[in-house]
Image 1 (cartoon, rainbow, N blue to C red):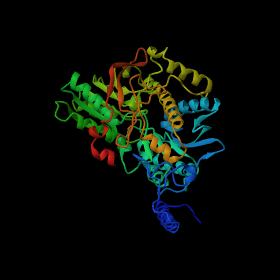
Image 2: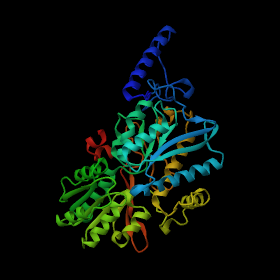
Image 3: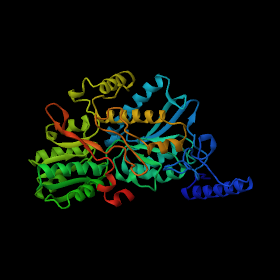
Image 4: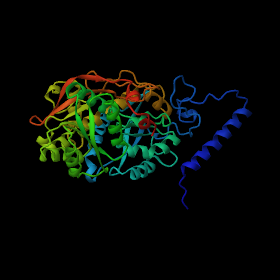
Length: 458
């Protein structure tokens, strides 16, 4: 017999439990249900009853401290570890090295007690259905298998798990995607990472063109999903009222790396500017196709494409391309003496896996997410799910990991995006690293204003 609980059944059980709790409260003479509190007080903990709280744990199951056992905080994750999308696995090498360093020093201290951090993960090959299966097996149908879900890669992949995690009151934090959909208030248990919202990237490039190429004719290559939709709709909104036009938009399917025909069509559209919103191998392949066809266009690439591996595949074809980031490039000699970079390299040297590449920008990104999570955990007064999740919506001027100087992490109940400060960068193929262009761009608190509403509410 299949005993797996469906979302509908879980909802029914939650309603029944809530009714029982209400009756019990009435019988005991309580005039008001205050709820919340620490993990031992029931529910998700740390939610209802607190001023400004985003997550209300009153209707959560009594699992607020699930996944915390024997002095260990267990996190669950899912990301590509094989196939064409396996390059994303390098992200985990960064945060695992950081966690191993913290564990070697005795663990992260939360409310006077130290805990080790453990991460369990499975390969999903970037397939949303597999992500959902992986997270269900790691977290469990009752939500007790892990304390939180951490840094799952991909927009569609996180969308595939947000309903169940929302219902189980399991935090899904530092989602490894810049989708603006993480601002959807219907899903308070899911929040993004320091990847800038894709619409912020689009605005940064639109602003650059308005100043430097105000009559640009832009051809766009985007993935055929919410990831690509965010780039397309976000960019089109930002060029409204200007002389910049989009000549054509071509899409490709997630997991596909062959995009030559799409690039050919974009070049033929008369575009003199190339918005390459592709990720993984499709991105450098698009750059190589453009170069092979002699398409001399001002080119922008997705922030998901700026790793050493992908730029290396493109080689000379990547020379001069623009992108945005908020992470220090480990390859840029300007950061060689930077204290944070030195600590990063020392950590990777001592605790990194044998196959980790410290020069890879996505390793630096993963390391940064790990560093920020530890800082957030250390700031908690109570270690439970509700307290962690509400803290994620109350971050003030955080810096850490390899965030660029001038980049700060801020959130609030009305601003659910961790990183809206970005640096425009340009690739130097001869030196094989990105160089900063201008100063850090401050878009703090503007994502809802520069993002079509349907992208957030989807």
